[in-house]
Length: 414
Length: 222
Image (cartoon, each protein chain N blue to C red):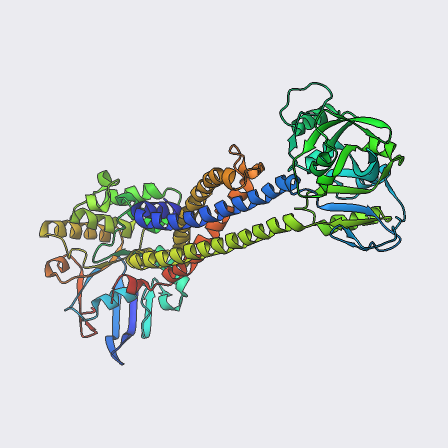
């Protein structure tokens, strides 16, 4: 028999007190693990939803004069000329920045006027694979784009299939914006002549409420060809994962790599989401701290009561030759065992709780934390260590008090 | 030569803004292997004397020497070591730990000692008091007499030179009291020095000498 066995036997004897202590620590760990896991899941969810938020980087050429325009309204009578046009080489350069892995989608565009039925219209040359990944809110009417006959219900699915297969839209297919299609009476399947070239209208966009409604989207190379601007790009939109790489950092790196271009970081919807997440994070931290403090107070009060209850027993230990450190060891072993038990069960229950909640709160989070088959050993270790530290620190004062108990008084000799 | 020597030992306790003198310049000498009884009315200072002998209650004045060691010159933790090495206690209420079995209770003083076969020694001590066959029982599964025997076994398991017993038969019937006194006599023969506080003259008759104490004054110290 040793000090540890005495501690274990005492836990067995005072089961209800041990359960109260364990439940307190269990609740604290459960809350902390659940909130933490959901918080991380929500972060991952934002990461996964970046595509839906659209682009967050815009790269345009630098202009000789400051453009006099606001919200799409140009008030300058003089067309400002770029210092240097963007081209395909700039995309290759973008891939060489230190944080290039954070660049998710790069979508170059060429914008220019064309004649349709003697009227001027605006075309936008795009890489459809990337454009449709960015514009996930686009909806279509009409038939699916022509090309290889593939059984898909949505043009986006077709693009995805083709992207996987390494193909793209056929070069003579176009997507017409809602208002432009209305103006020129375009329908899916009709042919359209642009600067002496004939194209198939593959799809008509449903109203987006944006500039997309007024333009005709076509393959970038075809646009460069009919606008007679080979290799040229008007601007580049990009989508970046920014959770581990602040947007300003990306902007700085890109600006350095593309000195002839102006790089803008767009933080609108993402910033809102991040603000919400920051509020949830603050709530989680405060809730966890409150729970941990409550657990610590519970341990302190229960252990203080337990020590008082065991005064006589401690007196016996002291009388038969136990040193103060032996008394402290017994009490601390008890609370350590209870804390570890509370921490382990709290973690596992928190894991199961977040496993149930994450699919509802953050459906796109698929990270390590939420894989039902994976117990995260780092989080588990931290949870158990936190429970252990809270338990032992809160019990330290009662344990020292017990060790200092006067054996004569404890045994009521006097 | 005296194994235990009290020299002009006094003890006062604060009480109601003043002091109570529990022991007044007590002198006592106990030889090795002597079995003495301390008798006196309630509140006479018996328990105070026993707690001072037990290295747990420093006197206000005077000295206590056990085996030539000036006990209260030791620091608090050294006093704990001293109790572990030299003393065995049989408390008035026996004070067995309710969640430990008889053998585990007996083993208690050995828990903090570097002893190899703790259980073997504990069983040996239980055998000496005739309780080896009930080693695995919890205190509440033992009779009062058996519990007293476990308390005695715990007092002798560390080969204590000095056994201090505070009314060990206080809650026992005459038959069990007789048994316990026989155990003490056996221990005395084995070389243990025993100081027993009792109210019972019959128990005192088993001892070598009776020391009386009244109002903090010790007499009969032959």
